[in-house]
Structure formats: C-alpha cells, structure tokens
Image (cartoon, rainbow, N blue to C red; front, side, top):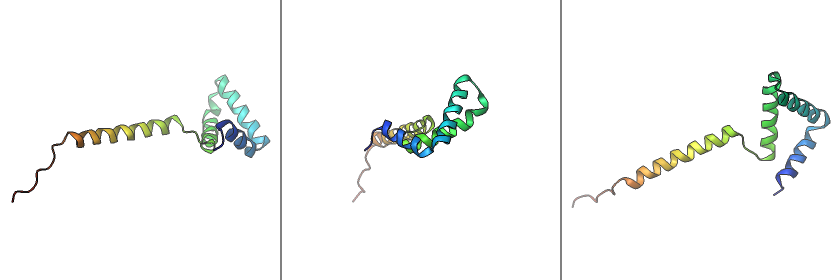
Length: 88
C-alpha cells in the first residue's frame, strides 16, 4: 500500500495544474479568514481526503458513536441472566 504522502501527490497530480492552483488559492483565502470560499474549499478538501484514504472528522465521530452504541448493547447482553431451559 502506498504511503499517504505518495497518495496525496498522486491525487494532486490527477487534479491538474489549474485545479491544484485553485485549491491552493482557496486554502490561502481560507487561512486569511475569507469565509466565502470556506464551503468550496471544504468540499474540495473532502474529495482529496477521500481519494487519499483519509476520513473527515464527521465520519470519525459517526464511527465512534456506532462503536459506542454496539459496546453498550453488548454490555446489556452480557449482564442479562442466561435463559433457563424449558421445564420437562
């Protein structure tokens, strides 16, 4: 499996020069605090993250919530007394 930096370089190369330049400009504007490009930059970065194999904070939080729910359900099952066999 390729290293994350290598996959990022491949993803940026596939973007092409103009799109990579646009992404860099949007990130610079976002860094300066220009909120008009925030949504565009976030969407473009999410696409790059997915292509590289990274997850977003929302995806991570959703996975953590599902794991916590499963752990809770498993705990309830472990605490439940075993079913007694039917009477003869």
